[in-house]
Image (cartoon, rainbow, N blue to C red; front, side, top):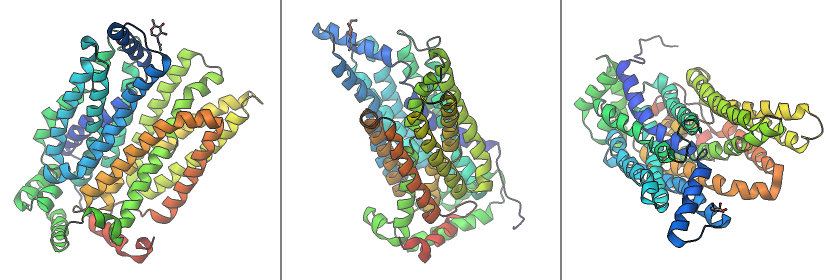
Length: 479
Ligand SMILES: *[C@@H]1O[C@H](CO)[C@@H](O)[C@H](O)[C@H]1NC(C)=O
């Protein structure tokens, strides 16, 4: 170990993290969770709107169809936003990109908030699309900005803040959705509109923080400004070492032109990191986390908890997700990314297989249903220990600044697409296969564990240059 004085967390860096993460990850988590509680209320509104408009009520199929649109168009917006990340991050920059992105939230909230007063449920669908675009862009821009402003020994911890805020905001959306708070017939438009608050927070705080020094130097070539930004973030003028590293990266980047979309898939040194980034995104979504959470209420009920207690237990699981993400934030710089990914996915693999057995044999002994509760909780714990947070920032770590925006764009779009696929296919599959649907997740998780074991490099504490060098070695480039 080289002992040197490394600048760590300070007030300004913390402000930048809060401005970027709270102002954007919140949208992602909140809008993922917010529709669960008021589903019946919103469906009632749609049903009544149809009656006022056409003089007849909707049948179950039509209503389910419209509801599915409202839920899943968010993912479609997410895919679209993710695909735009590369262009936005290159043209506007990370900071300005994030700031401008708040326009989509404003449009979304106006449409969603006024849907009920205006009597148009269609506005909910269009509004959710805009909110989705916002979340898609955020999921790319924020981890990129966070990774670029962090000192390398804190990059993982600061990158984890994104997922931490996502889990917190899912929990907040569930709590606010309770009937005693905003989950009522008159209040649900307000519940959905709360997502404007973090946008206002971001518009007030992020302008104070400088643009990512890497973007300023490597994309804009402005050295003085980059140095000034770095000094601001580190709280010290002794930033020469880090600046030299960035300069070296800059020189190298000038020699090698920015890769084209085609080169991302064909150049050996880029293809492998891209495959890894995308696989981790797929793994995060196809791990079955949403399926287990979906099943949790049923599992709690079959263990004899009543409706109210089951609902509380679900909230408890959300809280567990927050706590464990916080734990992973603390240990990710010590344990390393690869170790936590392996630990998390292996744990989920074993867990979901046991859960499958429990559901299969749930009637043969009474202790089994209690054991399933433990398994569900453990599954969330395993997910939060690494698989939930690491994929978001790993992509920024695996690429140097030239390829980073495009790689992020592709990886985050893959994440939203997987999210979309799981959302659409899980229920039909579950109807078709029953508990055997968990076998699919067991097999997938097994494959992800093998992939991580053989292919994912450890990026802890490494500079962009060292990571790029790893991929130039044969062991990683030969797929
Ligand atoms: C729509 O509302 C009417 C009247 O309240 C009700 O009878 C009908 O079941 C509702 N439709 C659906 C699909 O819930």
